[in-house]
Amino acid sequence: MIVVTGATGNIGRPLTRALAEAGQEVTAVSRHTATVPDGVRHMVADLAQPASLTPALAGANALFLLLSGDLHSPDSNPADIIRAADTAGVRRIVLLSTQGVSTRPFGPTRMAMRALEDVLRNSTLEWTILRPGGFASNALWWSESVRTQRVVAAPFGDVGVPIIDPTDIAEVAAAGLLTDQHTGATYELTGPEVITPRAQTDAIATALGTPIHFHNLTRAEAKSAMSQAMPPELAEDTLTILGAPTPEELRISPDVERVLGRAPRTFAEWAGRNVAAFR
Image (cartoon, rainbow, N blue to C red; front, side):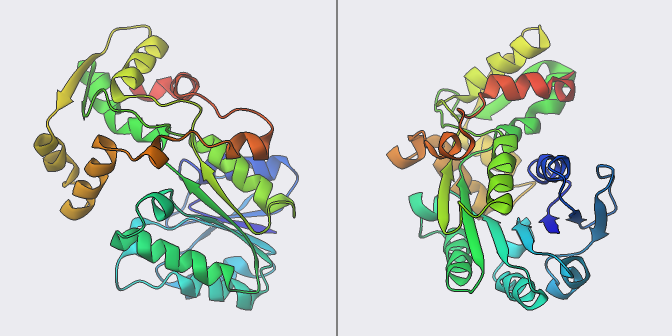
């Protein structure tokens, strides 16, 4: 049996579906009740309380571990989840980490994630670590303004990074959970092209078949808006990455193609599949 945490999110949903379609017994874990594919068991657990995950881990041989935002706080200890999985008899973990562990290693959040990676590496478990960059699904932040005003408002309109489709992350995760050949691997996951917010706007407009105006926010305006949904220091950190990506953050990684045998999906493909969110 395979346990998928964060099973109702942009990665967890397609991963749960892919595993079920591969004939696996799957337990989908989320904080709240949710609809899951036929044949999938759903359980409610809060990863901030690792003991609540114990019933879901019973009989499992593999775990996909995705940490919610509060598990990055200073008073959390996500390493307890790895220990709980080991105690329950889980043999393999695929951990969703972040590209920033290697590109910007000294921020508190990334230092904590690197420490968690090290706990997993030093355990007796089989492991695969995934380090994606920015997600195509972050464009869903713009869905309301596109629906109501046909406007995308974002900073750094002409600064791009190779964002990745979460479904590609899910498919790489499935490969790591289903086979032994990715044991001990750390994969950096990006999309196939550097794409700017302005170009993302054009791709959404093409998918909708209607023009969308792009409004370039100042850094201060963007920080004010982002600070409503995240701590101000995290908003500042995110804006630094978006506004001045490093050469490593601009690099297009070959790892998706290496694992899946095909190129990663483009943002335009993501927009076409998710166009209903912007209508």
